[in-house]
Image (cartoon, one colour):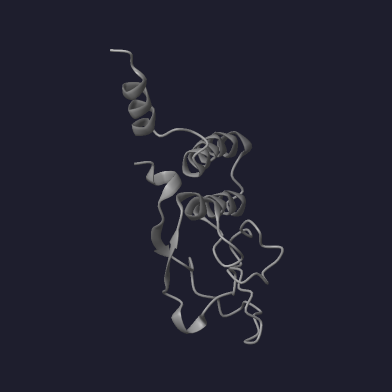
Length: 132
């Protein structure tokens, strides 16, 4: 129950390997894919949880919440929704389409973060609170 808010799921830690033209020194472990926007908390990559990429294990998986999968985690994982927004920016999407897609992205982000109830949670709450 309530897996969206309470459970973690295995997800690929790095969306893509570093590109050849990325200026990332070997001693600099702050990897940011050139296509994506920075994830939340990316201003400070010195925390113990955010150690940067393991270039020897670029196909690594990590446990993440739905909010982290969709919204991003640290400096190394930008999140799926920021990648979609970066793609829309990259393709010079017209403002009407961008605004329409952005409404859906905000809806998905709210569901992933637990801010909006999932249909299953709503039904469970409705049935358990019903007076009959």
